[in-house]
Length: 365
Image 1 (cartoon, rainbow, N blue to C red):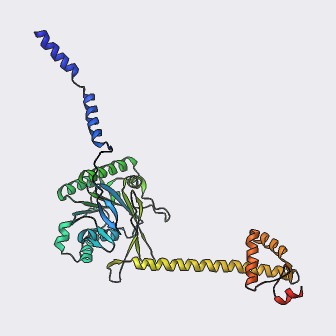
Image 2 (cartoon, one colour; image 1 turned 60 degrees about the horizontal axis):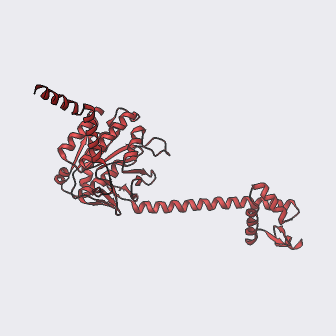
Image 3 (cartoon, rainbow, N blue to C red; image 1 turned 90 degrees about the vertical axis):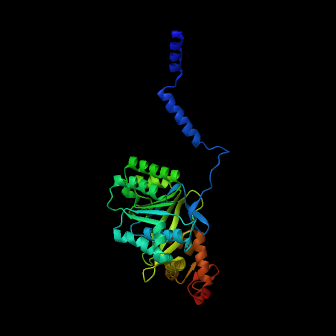
């Protein structure tokens, strides 16, 4: 009897899974929950905002807003905040019903952060209490990088927002060029976004070179790789127009929209102003091209007239063509068209395949 009991105990012990086997089984269960098959039900994507019917900043995902320093990123965000507060601002429309928005500013001084709230109230005309209830803004410039992620988790847990804006995500890491820290931070933010089903918008500067529109460092690279939407702000220094464009999107790209400050400092729609500026720019470019072309044609004509003079007032079309081809390194067909155009405009004259500078000279030959 004693042997039977001891044999059972030994048998059960041998049959029990090892620690490693338990870990693997738990991993299998987690991975099984993440498998996507043909019958998997996936909730439809919910955009936090739309522009002309195109959704952006989907819930359950992280997103980016980038631009050079002082290019209007915070101003663009104020328009987004106003849309969330009152349903629509200019062409930007909220995809959410009276959402709660958490805004963490890690770069500006307290007085400038206060302007975010003040401007949203001014733009929307909403009651201050409503805005305070639906928009929580924090000035966190004094917080150290190793505190901010825990601050974010605490505020999300307490406030339960549907949208989180981090204006200055670079302050969440000791160095935006630390690849390990960048990967870990973006992973944490993505996990929070999915678990809480909220849209997280991360603001990051682009590199300093004017023609480099990539977000800074490894942090920017990781954010660009993982973000569902990346918007870019560009400011025309001449007109003051700030244009928000979609540089990256997993689905449809948001149409551009523009804003600017009026004379009294109010943020206003600038789509028409930008359209007019683009039209004027195209017209100016076309005029410069025409002037350059006219100058080029004049240079060729002057040289052709010089050749005609040096040949006693008349030169064969074939010889003039060869001279101009060599002088200006052009195709024969191009030179032939040029000579024909000048004859049509009566700058040159042709009789019996000889080219001259005046009808009298042409007839004489």
